[in-house]
Image (cartoon, rainbow, N blue to C red; front, side, top):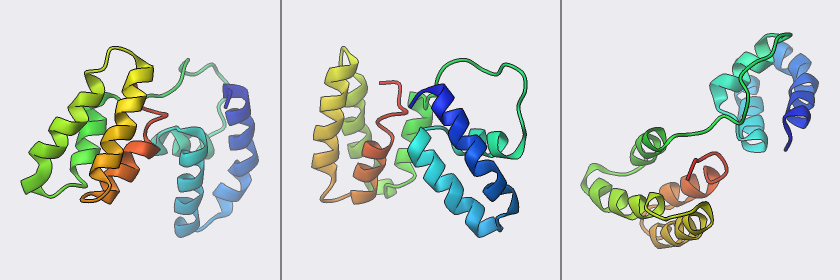
Length: 130
């Protein structure tokens, strides 16, 4: 999605978000987070306030440390070392294309024991700066 199309999407959802209940706002944020790849807090700011000035340029990214923290929060303590080792192989790849392939391999490997981790990896592929 282009920034213009994301801005149009947010403008379209803003009235519904403003009158929604807390539970409904959560659903709206979940859906927009999935569609745009933006972080939840950025979407809250965009939906709550009408921005007129120029904002930050570029796409918001999830950096490695945040990705790992969120990922490890979904793993039992006794298995964190193993999952960390597997996920580090993603970031060790020389380019983005190979990192994407490695992410798919890691997600497939972890799917059996840690389905939440595998789905998180796949969902965050767009927003990660691999």
